[in-house]
Image (tube, rainbow, N blue to C red; front, side, top):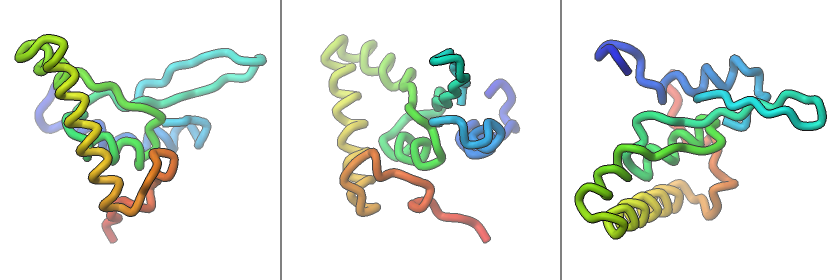
Length: 118
């Protein structure tokens, strides 16, 4: 987000998935050639700060998420132990949020858990 008034990436994720016509397994399109077929995978790579953010991105269709800033904060504050602590916190938050949604596996995360505006 270079401009404060631009739409947050998480709000665009579903549209990006739709643009690739369901061929994506979830923001940045990485293209690989496998058996001469084009495979698109969409990954969320911005504004992931909490386990809840991870859950929302996966529910919106991301195949995976990248976690940058929290890892760097952990590294600066505590070295490799700080990074480990950040990952433990994110995992705990994601596990808790999944439980609140009645989910026991990441494979069960889908758009049904999201609130939809009328």
